[in-house]
Image: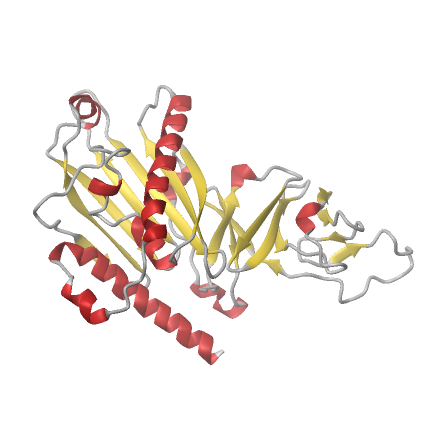
Length: 339
C-alpha cells in the first residue's frame, strides 16, 4: 500500500456541520467530521476506551463524542472530556487516538496517511476544473488491481468497445491507424493529447461541432489520480465546450480498490443545470459499471515472455504508464524495506 500520499476522503458538500462520515483508506478505518465552527477533522474510527467505532457517536461543539460512554475527542485525537470522571480528576495521558492532517482543495477534503517527514513530497493532483465548473461524483468499490484501475480511464482503445452502448460515438473513435500521442512524462506523472475520429450523430455534431477529430487530453498522477479531457471547439453560433472526467482511486484493503469518478463540464446544457447534473450522473454511473465488469474479470498474466509476444504498436500509452508505475512502485517498496 502506497501510504505517503494525500487521499481524497470526501467532497466538501458531503460534509455538513455536525455530520460524521466513515471511510476505510489504506487499510485504516477513519472518521471525518465537521465541528460546529466548521473545522474539518479526520481521526481513526476508534474510541480508545473500549475500542468501539467513534462513527457511532455524534459531534458536540468542537468535539466528536463516543456513543458508548460519551468520551469526547478534539481534532488532534486527544480526549478532552470523560463524563464519568470527577471534575478534579485528570484525564489519562494515554487517552488519545491517531489523527490525520487535512486540507481542503478543489472542493475536496484530503487527508495524509503517511510519515510526517515524507509529507512535503506528496502533492494533491491539480483538479482545477472543480473550482469553477459544475460537477457530479460517485464512489465504486472494485475487487481488482489498483494498477488496472489507475490505467482504465485513459486507456485510449477500450472506449470504442467497452462503452459502445453508453458513450457510443460522443468521445470519438479509434480505428486502424495508431494515435499520435503527444506525450510528456515526469518522475511521477504523464500527460498528453491525441485525436479521435468524430463519428457523432448529426444532432451531436450540430451541438458539439463538425470537425473531423475530437481533441482528447489525458493525465495520470502516481499513484492515485487520472484525467480524461474532451475539448469541442466553438462552431457556428455554438461556444467551445469541454468535459473533464477525473478518477481518484486507493487501496481499501488487500482485495479492494475504491474508485471515485468525478465528471465536470463547461457550457454543456448550461441553460438547464439540473438536467445537466442528472444526465452527467446517470451517464457516468453507467460508464463506470461497464469498466468495473472488465476490471474485476481481469487477471494478471505472469508469463512475461508470452506477454511481450503480444505487444503491439497501439499500446504505446500503456507501455509508458507501466514504466512509470513500476518505477515508482519499486522505489516505494525499497523505501518501505529500508524503514
